[in-house]
Amino acid sequence: ASQGRYLCLTARMSDLIYEGQQISQQRLALSKETQDIAKKYNDAMNNTKMEVSVVEGGTQRLYYNILTSQDPFSGLCMRLVDTQGNVVIPGKNSSLEATYTDEEGNSVTSSFYSASSFIQKFMATDEHSNEMANWSLDKIKEYYEENYSSSGVTLNFTEDKYSYLKKADERYILDENINDSEYLEEMIKSGQYVLQQATTDTDSWEELSWQGSTQINEVYDTSDDAAAKAEYESATTELQRRDKILELSLEQIQTQERAVEKEIDSVKEVIKSNIEESYKTFA
Image (cartoon, rainbow, N blue to C red; front, side):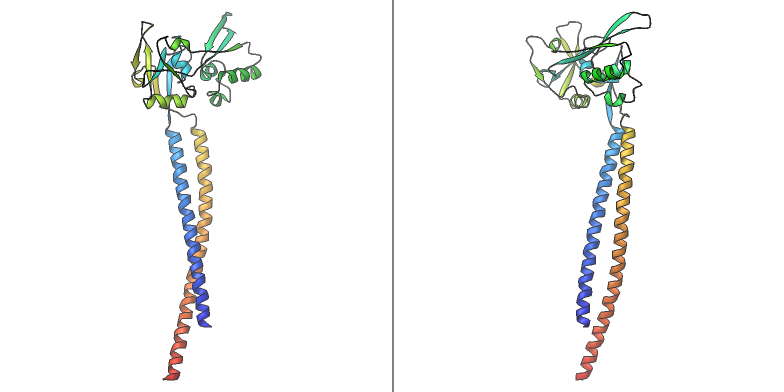
């Protein structure tokens, strides 16, 4: 009977040890999740963006349309080429033309080549302004006409080829992602695309380092900091809750292990005593 009891207790101890190992593995996985969340949070708090300074529109994020606009008041009069010298174009040029009455009562027409520049001019106080900065211009037009119908601003959306960026004897490539500001910045920073500045001679261009440009600056992007902080705090709280549950479960298992270990020691003593008594019988 004691031997049978001993075998049952040994099996129970093995089960408890296995359960404890499983919980420890789960806590290690949670620790890895915590590190990943912390890294994601740190990346969001330390990410940067490129900003440009133009006469009309002030400081705003770098977009392809602003970079390549040949209007010195709303753009940088630059272009992009790849490492083979091919002119980089997205295929089509979008612009939003706004006609409105200024403070002096004059009718004014301005062209905007990025959502951010239009928002800064007409919708800076809109609660969705940060979200809309990456919208397409046709979507901005639809939103503005729906929500600002009484503003007195007439909008006209146009789409044209980027013919002014290349000459007949030059090669060019299409990049459908180039209107994405983050993608554009990555391609410039990595050196896969090179900036070229128009010279006084309209038929020639010269290479320009973005670090050496007085109109382009790299700054911390704080637009996503609040969302990143909220996500980090929520995820951290949930991970701590799950870890606490696992910690309590592990403590219960360890308590049971100690109890079973004492019981095993007790049964061992009984078995040892029985063996000694049995040998006395034959002595």
